[in-house]
Length: 120
Image 1: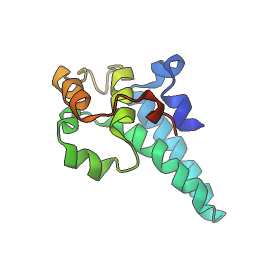
Image 2: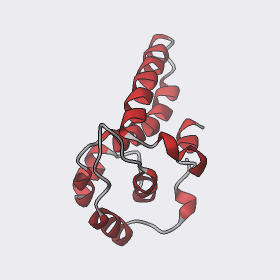
Image 3: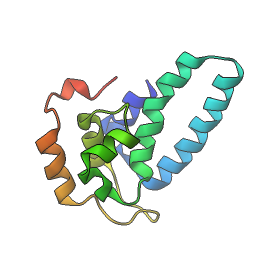
Image 4: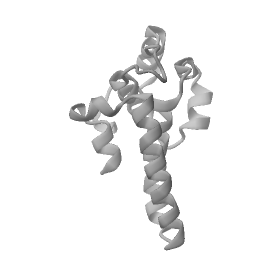
């Protein structure tokens, strides 16, 4: 639910580096609660959310030009999900640079155009 809400068009205002950091803090707090009550299945769901937020807080978006780096840092996300997050990304004071156009071109060449793959 959290992940799907994050990538929903109506929530694009939250797709900034600043909001990403704030949400990461809240998710970290939730992770701690999950570990205390031994709810591993909740943590496995949070992994998608954490990795989505990592996409937003990554200042150097040129990382997304390297397929092996994406698989290493974002193993729970597919290319369509990463592309969606980057398309929704808004610049702010923490990350004033937009996503380079070559990143979108690259993702379109390797990604799956099936939009049904975006939601989990």
